[in-house]
Image (cartoon, rainbow, N blue to C red; front, side):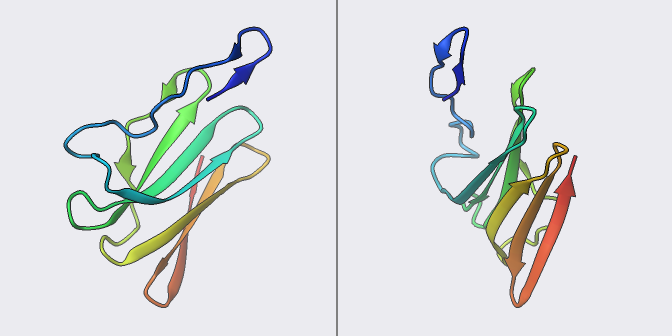
Length: 107
C-alpha cells in the first residue's frame, strides 16, 4: 500500500503472483526501500521443494518485477535473507548458507 499526496492511499498490491509456482509457501520475507521510491523484496519459496531465495523489485515508474531466484544463493541451503538499501538506490542482500554469511549487491 502506498500513499501519495495527490491521490491519498493506494490499494494493496500483491508482491508475488498467485500462481502454481508461487502459491503460499513463501516465508522469511524482508523488504527495503530506497530514497527514490524503488524497493526490493526477498523471501524463501518452498513451492518447488528446493527452498530457493527469490527477489522482486519495485520501480516507481513501472511497478513490481516478476520474482526470480537470487542468482548466487544455493537452493535448500540458503536461509534468512535480509536486505538493505543504501542512499544511492542500490540494495544489498545477505543470507546464511551453512556456517557462511553471503551477500550480493543489486543496482
